[in-house]
Image (cartoon, rainbow, N blue to C red; front, side, top):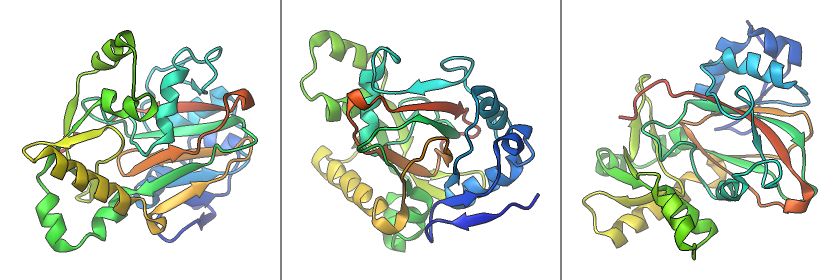
Length: 270
């Protein structure tokens, strides 16, 4: 099925023109899956999907994880709405979702319910394109390196001095080791980076941290990044296996609220 599309930057982000009923019908599922692999991020402005429509659409692009209410999870830093709100603040830093799982999830959708007056823009970086544009000598040096990802390490960006009970909770999430370079079923490669990336196995820690820092700076250059400034009702879908993302901080009292669905992993991280 053809659909009107507008590329938002040369390397990442495409807007499509459609409506809630068409999305919920599932007829665009294959088109959007293809766009996600090509462009990383797909935007539908002013879709105003209900929870049921968001779930129906999400099922057209993959298997929905059973999070939140029937698969719809409320993203907010308001603890009265989300008991784990404190950990949402980790989203203020570049990351991929599920990096401390065995395999990060395939994709996710965000449905804008209520916006903050300040902050709250979401940024996405194309880690396929960042890999593709690395010099060949660097690609050869990095392909094969393995990185330990730690939930505790990512939370220290938010709270560098945790209480013992909180630290104990963080450490319940076992660190996971992933390749720095993800070779996908399609044959394409992407970088696996973000705030969970703690150290490079077999490398001096200071040297490894410098490498990870330098690659994050490389991958988040403006030419690889799309910034989404939200309006209520926007639906945004991203390929979590080939992008990083972060959100600009926003005040708790402004009660920003997004409804998220998460699409389960479909391929091994190799």
